[in-house]
Image (cartoon, rainbow, N blue to C red; front, side, top):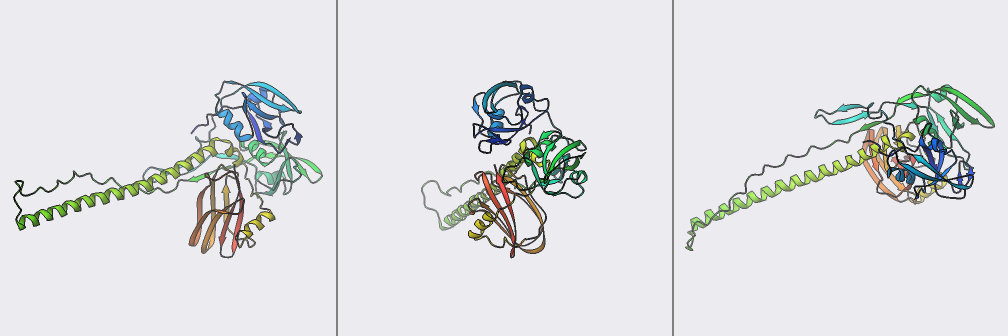
Length: 425
């Protein structure tokens, strides 16, 4: 479960047309550099915030994802040619890829175990925590992470960060958006002293304090039905032999006994076939559960060892659903979204995601519960109904076979609903 991808040492995001970090560029495709890891190969090579990486060793880099894919084809210690744009000019530089430092994510896990010795839940160790929820980005493209809410008692509240503030830098490193903020905080340890630049209306402030900590993730292994034991493979019963082998006719008594033996033989064969068919069905079910578990473990590995994990170190807020998107869903027959359904501890993470979203919430009142997912055109791509549900809901929504883009999660009970926007990328 290790991340074998070598380290270049850049924080990136996708291009916004022909803009990167509010700077115009001559290209529309590439990985926009939003920050440089201190002491990394990127820093040694002279790469800077605002550069646009378009190729590694001649392989096209179209966006943040393709940069990760290209780097995955190399090994630590290799020298690569990085092609990038700066100030409108195309440049090349060589960088020696480094080995990714082993983090203590896996060492810090707290495993629990079922009675049969299988793990069913773990918590990762403490992570640096700021305590802000991200808001909808300004349409004018202002740089910085817009704060939609501040978590009570968090480090952010103690520093004096407020709702509607825009965090523009942390420890002198520019913050382009909320993802950049998450990455920067994710590289730090709990208790680290930080200096945060904030734009509050027309006022610029510098707020200081120490990051908090929290246990970042809990993962529950789905229940696995026990595999039925293999039915005993008794030897095939011998086929009854004819009482006469010399061509003489059988007496009525001999024929009746022979027919009874044949009927018993056929019953034995039929019972054996039923046992094998039942075992086959049990095995198919077990195999499906194992495949689902394997997909969830793969998703978990990507979260823990990949770029997604960095985004989860800061509590990322809900992506706002516009009025036009609400109207689109209404036109597709989605009802009750104007009446808010109250759900306890509602979370769906990570968001954005590669296709797996961990959904959990508490339902206080008993009633028929519907969980639906609609694509960007409003068509329903997932549906679940639970009759008379009350209590804790936990599922992993699997959209891995769907295309990248925007999806809408609609949770309804009675005439009330909760609406969330999901991003698959």
